[in-house]
Length: 96
Image (cartoon, rainbow, N blue to C red; front, side):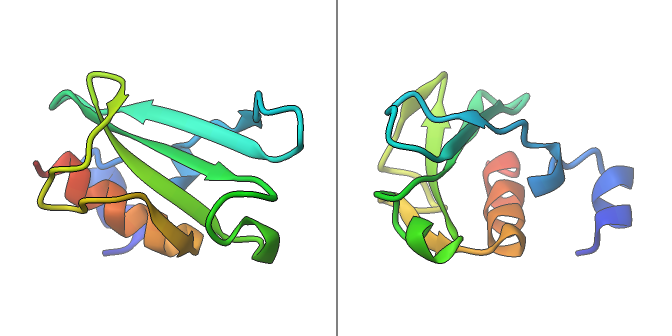
């Protein structure tokens, strides 16, 4: 699904994430986003995140702001993600 289709469907994508400095004080960035269905995503890239040293991202599924490990999308933190991978996971979360 391309960005134009996502915009028509009001789906949030990687481009909608607002990254801030990670509070770990060791470098990196983090973004959190919440969706209308109560789910959300935390997306991070730090020296210690899965894939962060390679310029890739990790994503955790959130429900009402807390990490959850029991969704059809994933049962763990997903790592080594490109921005396109993050968008695909975000689409799945929004469809829950």
